[in-house]
Image: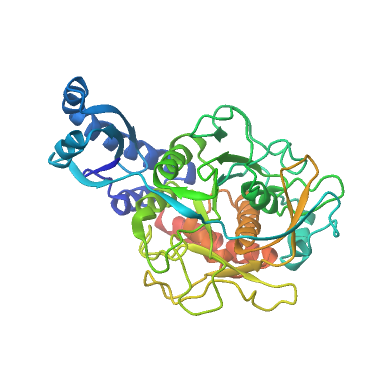
Length: 415
């Protein structure tokens, strides 16, 4: 059982205070994480006497806390759950839920040890080589992913793994090193973002970036407990700069259950990049969390990534708006989503030809890493402003240059 507590951080108020102080991106992240941890620790500590008493009585077996949302994970009897529900500190209770269907936004084609194309057409289509020629390949930026896992053994990902205790989490405790499941979804999506472009195969937009991963969807199905564990770990421990969420909840319309988590990531200057989904071309085929509106700061829309095809036209399966969560535009940008070469973890040099907005999101995350290398102080909102539209790395760099110049001018004027 997930138990949400009433005490929560006012992220908008905190964000305004940090910007007034002129806090840098790293300082903003540290302040937001500290605030979330402090509120959670104080609130959860006040419940400890009750929880300990219930444990001694045998009504609560175990409990642990999270900070990304002030939330407890509690294993208890029905009597223990009822007692928790009566506590004034408790806002809501959510039973553990695992959805039956796969939630990945991919359409695999055929696996091949020797892919028919050695270089992904998507790289030239979005202008990645022009950025590389300027020395921009994502170096110094960390891309995270919550997915089926990621294979550190694959030739495209081996060199880019950040390493250390803060770079991999398997919530089920089945592997101490980064691995992927039979789906291979996380490996493929991540390779589009940060693949090392080795062995004559080029498919990663930001080959100089590092990566971390949490295996929150090991079987391709969404579980709200595993998602919370990974979400909290990404915020408090992994702390990537860009975070890939290349999956969706299966029900059409607006499901805001993940919005507090997304707000916390954004406030901590972690840019979530969402796959728009493959449920098109009908109108209103959007899914959450890609269709979120009203996000931190100031009511923004999620960075949802649809697809375009090899011919330059819209990829037909891309989910379409209008957003069920009330946003004006959905998706916010389009990236290559058809006939892509991606890493596949059945062997060190296995590849897959695949379609899907999952991989379009991976390409976009790689582009975001390049932008952050160029402007390490860029905020989540500034990155989104530079990226939206049709994914074009040189054009996005130019837009971000202008955004940063305006920001520096305004800051100088205030001084």
